Length: 169
Image 1: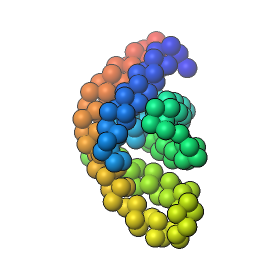
Image 2: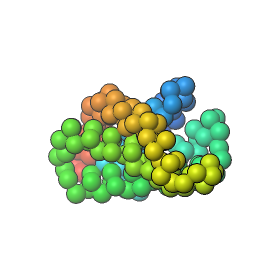
Image 3: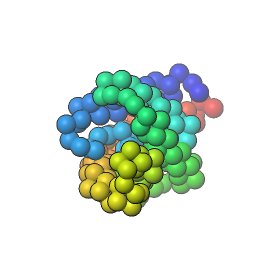
Image 4: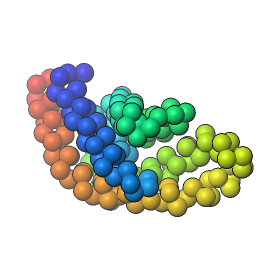
């Protein structure tokens, strides 16, 4: 991992943390998932996991941490790994597919969090999951909006990085 890649990871983590804190009043609407998808697609699965760890720990230091923190890292880490493998296997991904994947990721994140947190309520998994679907839908819609806003700008930076990185190696 070179200095330029570490710098890009730091910038993405900062964008996600600040965005998560700024959008905190809106339930489940935050840019973290979209930023992790973008980072994973362009920088690889390891970068997606690093982003998941950094963003979760840093933002939860301000928003509150608890047993859910580890499951957030796992959920976002899985999304980062999937994004990284998609980015490695497919060079030209249509934008609507990226936005669709960000919507799917909102539901995937919610499903994983429901698998791990339903015991707290004393209800069964199905009841907990069904009650969480409106929040998962907010997350999915937020992901799509953030992807539409962030991807065109951030992808230019990454395409420049890839072009420069390939020319120097």
